[in-house]
Image (cartoon, rainbow, N blue to C red; front, side, top):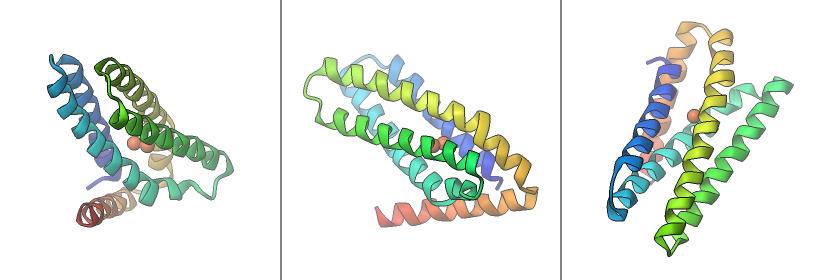
Length: 145
Ligand SMILES: [Fe+2]
Ligand SMILES: [Fe+2]
């Protein structure tokens, strides 16, 4: 399993959930989609922080990009916490817009910059090996949860 295909599939899953969230009519339904988005974001961010971002530590320029990516992850987690605390439906909707915008911007940067670096710096075999580690890490995270 190629690491890039796996990470891109996660991104696509999130984008599909955003569409489903926006198209759903009522607040209860939207809250169910929020829960799915939350689980997806937590898993994906944890996997990236464990096996993907550390690959770029040795390159100064890329390390800076990763530092920004980690800040984005923190921002996503903070907005998710705010959503969990939101009491008014209006606040829930506003915060969801903010969360979706933040994630969309973040995954674009990853796909436009970090993913390209990965393709350039790894052989297909290494990308498959990294893919295996991503799947293993996902399993470990689900078992720990
Ligand atoms: Fe990320
Ligand atoms: Fe990502």
